[in-house]
Length: 449
Image 1 (cartoon, rainbow, N blue to C red):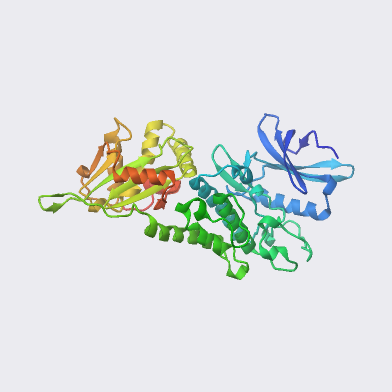
Image 2 (cartoon, rainbow, N blue to C red):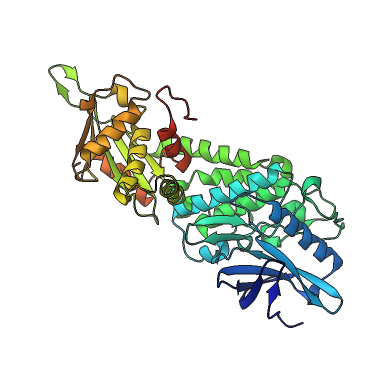
């Protein structure tokens, strides 16, 4: 059967532009609707269709139509192509420019790699919480939107569904091979084994290592993350726990992966981050003056890069706002504060980051010197920052906060640069919601209603 010249549903008509992907059972087209909006259509190829493949396709369609999680593919529309007396299903989805396979053809920035991985984990956390195991995770089934850097997990065609999420029951035959061997867990390579969420954990371990090394682990002598990006060597221990041959010895859930990453990062930072060393503080009139410097790397208004704020106050400490979280925060401010100009929008984000990094130290400081990023807005920044601080620290003097030019050789600036470049790890990664919640809190510290 030739490729369709038109896909028609109850809602719209879609005209194929070109084939952009093909697998064993499906073919993916870039299409335009009547208003010239771009979509992608996945179409079950008639020449390889079986009753079971149609049932699996329908289950995937049914699940994705009900999905609302931003990191799992959402289906916009669906329909059928008729050929003689048989109807072949297709569905309409957003068009994603890149798969993870294509993205990994170039060496990824480590921060971007972790951003991608966290979004994959977020999507699968939602699926696993509903009793759904993907069972075919691989870079070809993970897509990215280059406009906002969002990532979605797709192709739940051979997933195990809970009863609530299934449309048609499908019996998996003993000799049926599920998933691509390159990313399959050991238990998926043998007949009659029980396959559960731990098969996904194994695949996720392979993908995590590949994001940093561009190689799929094979055996025990594979290329480690430490060999390529030493600052992220702590991830090797996590990968090792995910790649255990026995499912019982493996990490058992996405939550455990996230905890392992966080704990491993904290352990590594404490023992390896050479910036975490005490520096001398000045003395005056026999009184110890405890002061701090704060600087930033990565402009707030650069939505294609992360931003890092660092403090040097006896200890050097750096926090990071990842690119995707910065975009979400920016979008929130545009939506909820449309009259806020670009510069003041940047300042809101900047002040939020300043508060996060200063909050722990503010009552111990006699003075804090913040690099002047926005000349002419010094009083505006100082006023907004003090307003946030005084929600929890009533007695903080306005004289503590000073907006000045920080010396280019200051420990704070050096720390910010190192974290920004990936030479050392951030001590804390900030989400958009954390900054939003700061400005919604009442003086008592409770959330605004």
